[in-house]
Each structure stands twice: as C-alpha cells, then as structure tokens.
Length: 292
Image (tube, rainbow, N blue to C red; front, top):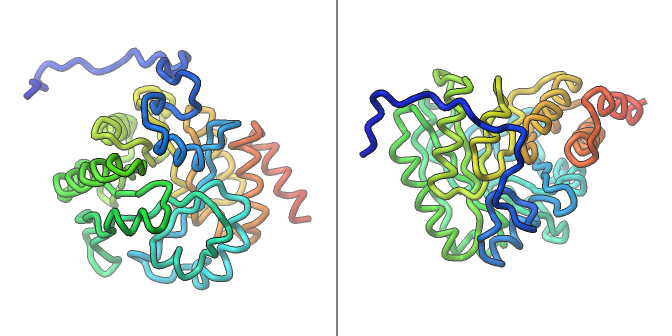
C-alpha cells in the first residue's frame, strides 16, 4: 500500500488546460469506452454542448413525500421536456413517467436508510442490473459516503455497480454524499470525486465548493453539480453559473426547480446557463421575463 506519510499536497491542477484524452468524443474521459456506453452517455450529455441538465426527483426514497413532490404524476410531465436526463427511482419512473417521453434516465439504484434514522450512510445497491436493463436506464446512480461510517460498504457497492454496468455498457453515476457531520471543503471534494472516478464511475455527482475548478480539473470524468437545498432563484442560477464556469459538465437540480414558485420557468433559465452560455444575471432576467 502507498505510504501516505510525507505525501505532498497537490498544487498543479493546470485548470486552464483542457482534458487531454477526449479525442473526438464530447464526454470527458469516455473516449476509449465502447459504443453502447458512449451511446448512453450521449443521451445524458448533449452532444452539441457536452453538458447536461438533470432533473432529480429521487428524494422520496428516503424522505417520503416532500414539498413539490407530493404528486409526481402531475409534476414530471410539466418538466420532463426541458431536462436532458431524469433522475429517479424505478418505482417513481415506472408509475409516473410516461415511456413516450423518451428521456435519458439516471436510475437511483442504491438505498438503505430513511429520515427516521440518524445515519443515512449505510446504503447498498438494491436494483438488479437486469431491472436496470429492462428500464433502458442510461445510467445507474450509487450513493457513496467518503469519510463516514458507511464508507467501506458504499465503496464496495459502487464498485459492484461499475462491474455490472461495464458488463452491459451502462454507465455508473457515483454520487458523493455529504452528511450533516461531513465537511464540504475543497480538500474533501478533491478526495471524494477522484476516488469515485478511479473506482470506475463514468461520471460523478458532487457539490460546488471553493476552488471548484481544481476539483473539476483533477477528476478525469464529468462532474455534475447537485443543486442541494432550496435557494432563492437568483442564487440557484448563480450556483449553476459558477459550477459551469468552474468546469462542471452539468447540474442536477431538484428542489431548486420543483420547489420554485415557477418550476417550468426556472428549469428553462437553468438551461440557458448550462447550454446557451448565459450568465447568472442574464438567466435571472430571462426567468423574470417568463414569469411576468
């Protein structure tokens, strides 16, 4: 095992130099993957921009109904047309997402706890790969807790998902989990995102942090930034803008869209930032124009 004693802190991230191994493919780190894997990644990441707007509505698997998600069958049809990828559980998708939408699906494949427990860090892969295939999933999402009690078992489950996904050309989305007691520092996200990528996840969902451009540069696969808790619309658009400017390949927003007073207008404003190069100010002005 490598000796961590005396290890020097990383400092040369070459943030301004593009990733060197993309070839002609638009998804970071995926140039040498097989055709089926690339086909699924191309459904998630727009080939014209290399970026994605994910709509997350998987909160119910540990929270139950929450504000904005009381009726999935009414909400998702309002928003699905705008998103590149829908992130949800198999139960929510089968019951509430019409298959005619023909959208990329990031299938939440891990679970194990609920809000009734203090510790949410012990998750395992609970969806059979055969079921993910039957659902035509574009990716399987596995929550991974780095630096918590559940680290070992969730890392093992992530690797199991990568192994199974690679067998059937289904990408794995490694989700960096941050619990109440876990730090949200640059050094933590440098470690966690790099670990998930080196385990074989073809993309990583993480949080925005200070010096995010270093985190994005050091991770050899695309980073998708989570929206996190509900923010004022202006602040949420700033989060999206800073994430893209810092090197993220997209955002995965849930509460900042479906808990907005105007969710359809909000997701359109996010699209302007991610795919059309709008600044956060321009996107907020666009949002205000839509609602007025």
